[in-house]
Image (cartoon, rainbow, N blue to C red):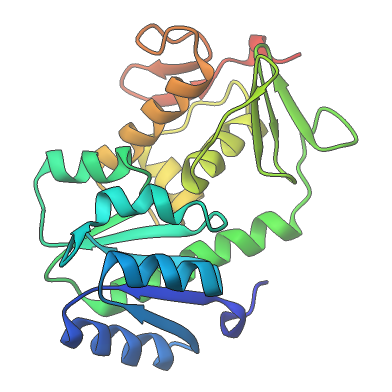
Length: 243
């Protein structure tokens, strides 16, 4: 399992009291490689220097929007981005996911919840690294489903022969479906299996990530043929699409 001391966390937040509180709690939980930035410019410079594994990102920053900053930060590796913001409407949450965020916590928040979500993310990373896939379709670890191929080891999604960018949490959700074709998962099960928070998430989190997968793998995302909705039960990846 990944050691907490090896994880680099960047806190992009202009309220110093929040930064101090998060740093204190995260250090107490065993994280030591902690960095802070208070503006978009500082965050980009920090990301270029340390390539953080996890970014806690405020949306309202003095020199710009954290939403727009999110996609720019993804150029420096593939960090797990958790928005911390006072913007709490459903539209704000959906926009945060649409811009590339992996998770979303509204202010005021309990810093222990932030630490718990980070630890759950790291735990899932460790499980994926140590557990062999039971349904790999080739010796290279690829999962092939009709028009798309997922290479878990290389973190690649290929659609009709072309690489398609895929945010970390969206990719992990797609990998989960690829490992269990034909099996229906409820929203609560998906949140537990992929996010690792024992189902403690709102419906919009899973719904947005399902939509983002469909936008990448379906010919017509509005009429999905691969990632299906099973009314009243959840979602499944069509088993018959597997090659």
